[in-house]
Image (tube, rainbow, N blue to C red):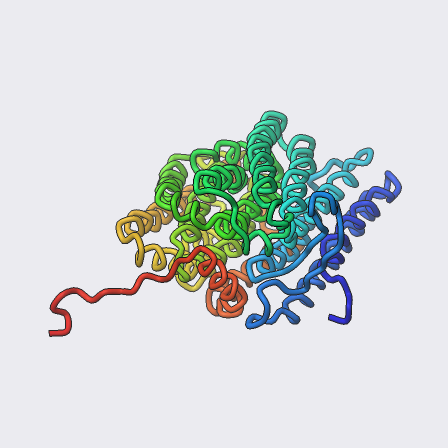
Length: 508
């Protein structure tokens, strides 16, 4: 569009904004926040331009930028946008401004702590956006690993009492996944270099990648890294610790955006680069996904810490996403991509509202509260709507994505879909029981400190609730956006939707 490198502007703006924040004089804490908030508006505007210019019936990758980076390795600065990348870009660009406002007072106003906090958020945004639009596998990997550094610092420097342990656990898990993926990236280059494919995913998808045994090993390397990042059961144990140790805005940044790099990578890289291996391992991954769905929901019921409950609920939701991806049906994959967006919005609404509650009540214990609804009706109402979205109530955004995943799975694995559907009951138990204990009944001592949502907090949650309601009623624009990506992915994998068969004697 008019020769403007929109994708470069998209990720570079928050990076430049981070540098600008660090240049603000040390005592100007509020000014640093406003500079950071202003820097997040450019990606938001660019994402609107990308939506307007994206042709759902056009080429698979649009707004492509291609420049030499490391010619001797065949690596390039190659960017492009398809439906799933655009949906992740919109999610990231839309959430980060709200997170800066939500975490307005999270960093102590001493020294340059505020400047560092805001700059780190902007760096994470920049790296996440570049990860989503990268079409070069090596460029993707570099950002996939580099994003760990600012995320680690956000947890370890600005979190709660257990922040050091949680940050180290997060880093070690993800570094292990990244090292395995590095070996797979090197292996991919070795088997692809003779054909001159380089690291451009478009060329790699069109080429062959060695024997079946080789592709299965390479698939395993990529999949392991993405399973840690997502996270998938049983590689999830870092997630609850981060959810409780990090500031709520940081936890949302990780669970709603950074973790989506894992599920995004499964669709773009695991399925498209290694279609035969993905089909071969599909039954195992489907089984692990169902385990995640049920395990996360069951463990969430037993939690007494509100933040850990939300973390285990997210584990269950990630299971639905991976189930939809590897069901390899058009409904399942469309639902999975839609779920990535909806989970990001619903988790942000629930986790931030819970954070507002905890900052007032000074305890994460569910049993420490009671009767909050009497003192803070707006907070209680927001908490309820966000919770109902998390349990996929019809009319709110996560319902249609969960429904599509279950339908898409049922056409290929009926028994699996039935087992996964049990989570609908379990999610109602942990969400409604949590709401009942915190918001209803007599007012507890901790609840007496709770006042209602303030204007700044309302400015954060109102857009999130509006999106949950809007996409719940009319998800068509987002589904249209991802339709071509789903069709392309299934074509590459060589899978087609199973043809429904009528029971014998039905038409007699």
